[in-house]
Amino acid sequence: MKTSCPFYILDVFAEKKYRGNQLAVIRNAASLSKAEMQAITREINYSETVFVLSDEKRNGGYDIRIFTPAKEIPFAGHPVLGAAYVIKEEIIGSPVERINVNTCVGKIPVFFGCEDGVENLWMSQQSPVFGQNLPRAELSRVLGIRVDEIDHRFPVQEVSTGLPFIIVPLVDIEVLKKVQVDLEEYRRLILNREAKAILVFCPVSAESYDLRVRVFADNYGVPEDPATGSGNGCLAGYLVKHQFFGKDKINLKVGQGHEIGRPSLVLIRAEKVGEKINIGVGGNVVMVVKGELLR
Image 1 (cartoon, helix red, strand yellow):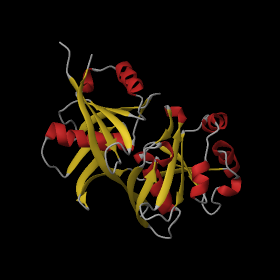
Image 2 (tube, one colour):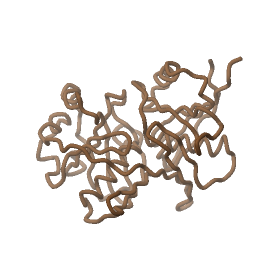
Image 3 (cartoon, helix red, strand yellow):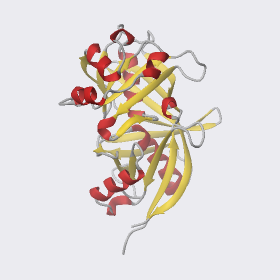
Image 4 (cartoon, helix red, strand yellow):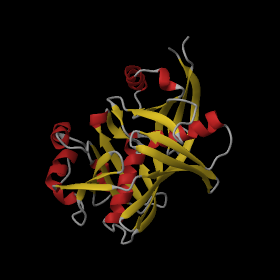
């Protein structure tokens, strides 16, 4: 007898429906093989699809697996938030303040709270690990911009809170808008390098956002991502470590996805406490579709 697998389509980091980053959540998925999970993810073809293995809590949380169209990955932000939303609304079915989501990199706590009349979900990420600084000239070739359009005051650096990113500070919004990745240069850059995704950012003066971001991850089957919780968590740690705003604590609104027609709002918080940097990434989740996976 085949097991029923409910599925849900969500918009994560969305101020309203049909914005933010689309996510498919498959429930009761322990009966699916890895090959089936990968095939379903390719069929859906969103940046990620998340599989909640069981409606039952294990080891203090709910087990999930995350896939991109290209491969399984250990951690990603918007699948964790989307999975937590489905667990709260569809499995638990009553108000809760916190849910633990078990990923390949460990247990991720997700908190629920109302701010300005909107229910935002917040996830605590691991303290960031800072890797190599990269040459600006190499990134300028990858991104199709001049070297002097990368902000010389701050490093181009690998950062990870579970999934590594290359963080690139740009001088202004016009440079960010014109970035166009050269795939040959990109593949040379990531060859033998742990970080396969690139996050470019710049401050903006618009009232809606403090920063604008773009993320490129062709290695994972995502040429450009509408909203990236893991990447923005890495960015939060980077901003605090390098005192980008001149302080050890930030609370910012980040706009992403505008260039591909999926504008999103990602909330980031970070604070240096001793040798660690505490990071929170948050946003709204909107349900779009409920159904059942046909097998």
